Length: 464
Image (cartoon, rainbow, N blue to C red):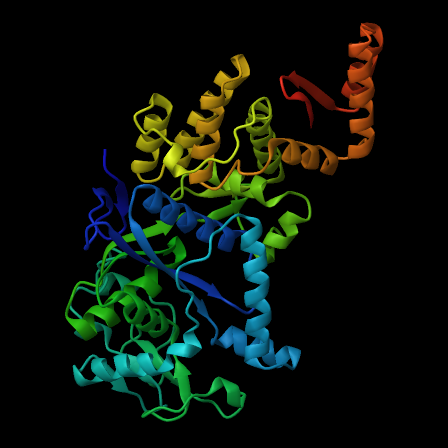
């Protein structure tokens, strides 16, 4: 079966056919970089990390672009509040983002453009729109997009202009001809810092948010490309406006497949600072390792709402531990995609799940089937397949012993050295056929929540 993806534009699952055989071009809206990344950002970047990983596993060459928005009202305000330059703030937050998402096993994109490096391309695009009568200069110095002049506006959100107008709750700007019109170029305000202003044919100012992504995407991937992704909250107006700008300028279909990941809830409520249930990635990593967080997110298909909870994280930790415990009985060694025989029944089921709109929960179920098979009787081939398939989605690449010991130590109780000392004493007792002492040590460890597993490679342990 070939890869099928849910296309937000058609609102149905479609067979994926790239524009160029064997090559995929994908753009994903990244961070507006004024603060630390939160769980919602992690969900989005995880979702498209899995997309690009599976495309590569399916044999495609992938050019993956994920931008950084480094000029924006919130960025300017935060830099002023802290008394630093915009660049100092965005460099600091970009470094923090890279550290946080690396802990989750999120691979870097092929290109990570910063908006401020593409202002010239944005101005060129605005010029094309103005020439075509789709953009106009407002009395307040802004340049706006004339939404009603673009045929098909609303096709991504599935709403007509009249429906969108009926839902308009923002008063018409002095410079706008229609409330739905959006800004392409924002005229500079006297109170704004000098590093927030760029020279242009329209006077000093800065680009609007929507034009940034159109310019970066078209500059790096061309006027037409395969996949555009982002969070569901970006479908309207951001992605709708990207289509209007890009297709308005080129006269060509902008993107073939639009992918959107689901929202994040916390204990079944929308994540919000006002509700006090807002968590940064760093908040989570204080209590759980990055692979556990990754595994937790993989348990929900990318389009479904993701419910974050402490209980869910702990359950994910236990599940990941079970997979590593199964692997600990056999030294699988180094494995790669080349080691996967996709005709093998487990691998075929894994592939079928991923090919059906990246159904990671079903793919993980296959990994647990393999773990159960390992637990029934150690097999190098099964262990290697389990590790290789885990690697496809970014898990199970640590040494099982290192993971299990680190996981157990982080759970409290005996430290690693104390546990290892008791295990060594138990091993000596067994060699001396002092089974009463061996059993006593096992019971002592069990009382501390340490579960032992004897295997050909020795005794492994895990904190229950």
